[in-house]
Length: 203
Image (cartoon, rainbow, N blue to C red; front, side, top):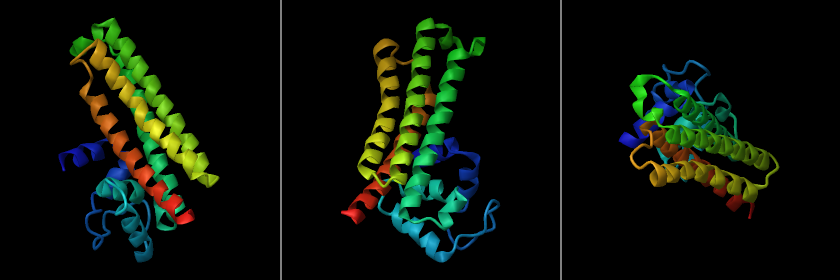
């Protein structure tokens, strides 16, 4: 549960607003950006998320997008990929900001090697964002095999960042990036599971 709560902190603000009431579908007072979803649409989100490894993360991510109220499973997969891409983009910005930090409050960043590693991390998260954009294009073309390849690649890029830190600066891997890596991993897992549903329904 602690991991899910940490992940939710890293999701966009709109996602947080939606998640505040997502465990219960009996109260819709928290909805500020769209009308409450129709029961059938909400049921599709729940049934789709039941097929994923991270149900709470899935429901939160999908419900944050108003278009989920009218989307089919293919549309839900595109939303999941978009949320993952947004996460990767924010992580890239965070890594770049850490690399550029010069304040004495962040003493470890005085190490030039650590700054170089952080810039590499920013680039890797940028690669993940681009891979997810390609995955969304593949979903639009109903090419689910390629979509899965792109999402899998996106999940792997941040691990390169962590591995480099472990090899070159053990113990210096920023906790913020570790949390964002876990968040992206879970979001990519959700996207892959939904894409798998599409693949099985078309086979």
